[in-house]
Image 1 (cartoon, rainbow, N blue to C red):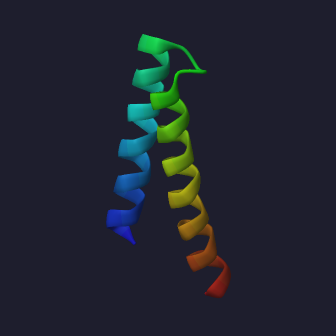
Image 2: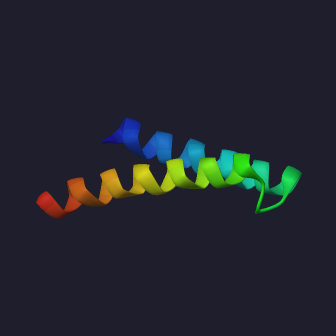
Length: 50
């Protein structure tokens, strides 16, 4: 679980950095946002089952 949380935080920071550099509608930012959404869904699904 800790590695998942670290990956979520790393991806979140990466997304913020990319958005600062390129703007919110940049394809790299959108892709990173989708990755973050996916990680958050995994995290939420694990917490619902416990």
